[in-house]
Length: 257
Image (cartoon, rainbow, N blue to C red; front, side, top):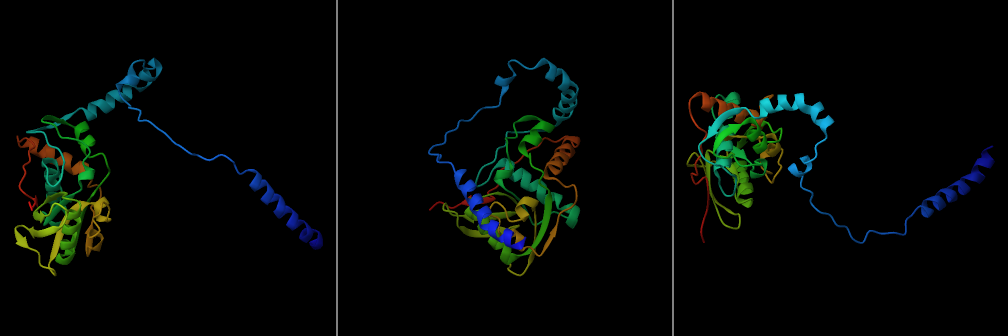
């Protein structure tokens, strides 16, 4: 039996090679084209009546949640480098939310511009608006790091020509170099520990924030999503009879050369 098996192995091997080679296509892709298809109300011109009826009770429930007015924006706020109304507001919310970990606001709040996905328009703020601005399940992380790494973080931000920051001030060049960085108006000391309130996505070093994983301590409280924190902030301000507002403060300044 062993002798027969040894004789057939080469034959089986050759058969497999033959089959594989015969399956190789002589065709090659030389060009690929595509177009964008807008998913909008155009597709609702002729709705499926049965599907509409099936979804109606669920839609009513979702609409009652998403269209609920939770506050009022005093002005329209958008994102944009080096500094913007919306990024300042969200960074402030993060920095103050660190109080649930530290018992006080963090030294710095940080949010990436890419995490803000829509404009907060002037007027009523609905739950839907907040989901549109903050669609990701990002959560609060409070980091503790030495000043030497905070300087590195400032360089990360300068390279990207600014991100949403709170509690700190940066002076950068047009080509993304850091000229000066302060915390609460004071110079950074290399061996001093500083606290940064940000989101888990950035704490992992994403979006060019390579300094953050070098933190000595990382605390991410359960259930503290950025969207939830922002919603809580809006509702607290509303309960106090205040509108949601923001302002430009020169948190990131680009030096004219």
